[in-house]
Structure formats: structure tokens, C-alpha cells
Length: 232
Image (cartoon, rainbow, N blue to C red):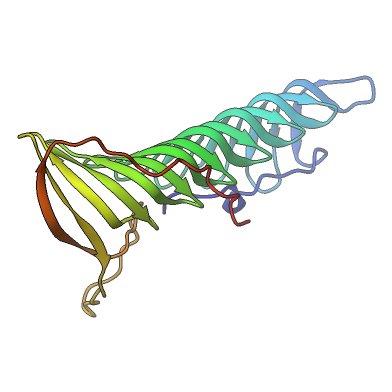
């Protein structure tokens, strides 16, 4: 599963539980460098301040997940790397235990997303790379608005909606010509015998309708508008 949220990997937030070895302050709170083994089987090694994880540390979950990075008052905050049990990994900014800011997510199949995040979701400007590179704007985890798909011998420039190419656009070929047209949504038939497999980047079924072929032209997308606030 991709884009796993930390809500599926809850950390112990009670500072006075479990076994602890390390520095303490004058009122016997965990303070400074220390190691803790928590009642749920998780472990933490790093800095504390007044009984809470605060500063650089490593938190190991009993399921094999691991977070290495900054903490603020028991919350992941600042720069950090989270390694998930499915082999995926996030390296980047955190705010209040959530992926937020700039970061790179590597999926189990090798795909990557590099760009803006908000509340655990791809949100803002970014690049999703698989067999090609999807460059554009992301809204609540999905590619939206004007964007670009770069492949080996051609690229596509046009509109995206819910991660799918949908609306007017054009293909630019390395032989020096362009194919203009429109992507329209089509009904997708389900094959009952095949199981659905969740992919890191699921798209809506669309069909390309060619309109004309021209020489190379300048692409002029509509004015870039900041994405709306994510739906929480």
C-alpha cells in the first residue's frame, strides 16, 4: 500500500511508560539522550526534553517500520525519513506527525514522487516518475490542471483531472511535429475473473481523439492558480 499515513503506525505518546535508560533533569523527567522500550514493543533512541521526544531520534515500530529524524514535543516535526513495512520510503519535511512541505516518496514498485505535500497527501507542485515523468500540480493526492508527461521520444502537454489526462492537449514528437487533440472519458469495463490491484498512481479511463497535426508550437497553459486547501 502506498502513501501510508502515520495514523496506521501510532507511536506511544505517554512519556512515563515503559523502560528507560538515559539522562534525566532535576525533577527526574527524561531529558537529554536516552533509550526507551515502550509497552507496545516499539523502541525509541534519541533526545528528550522534559519527558518528551524532542530533537533528533530514531523510533522503531514493532512491525518493522522506522522513523529517523526530528521531533518536537513527541511529534514528528522538521526533517525526517520514514521507512514503511511494504518497502516504501518518505524523505522530507514533517509537521505535527504528518508529511507536509517538500519531500520524496519512493513506492514499492520503484515509482517516485518529489514535490509538495500537505497533510500526508501530494499537494502542490511535483513530479511523479515511473516509465516517464508526470510534471504539474497535485490536489489532495491527485494530479490536476495543466501538466506535462515526458517519455523517451515524445511528451504530452495538456489538462489533467484526477491524475488522468482529460481535456485538450498535444503530443510533441522528437521528429519535429505535434499532434493536437482531446482526451475524453470512457466507461471502463471490469473483467470479473481478474482481481483489482491497487497501484501507486491509479487513473481514470480516457480516450485520445486526434484533431490535427502541426509543426512545433509554443505551449501556453492557462494561468497557474495555487491549488485549493486540501479536504481534511
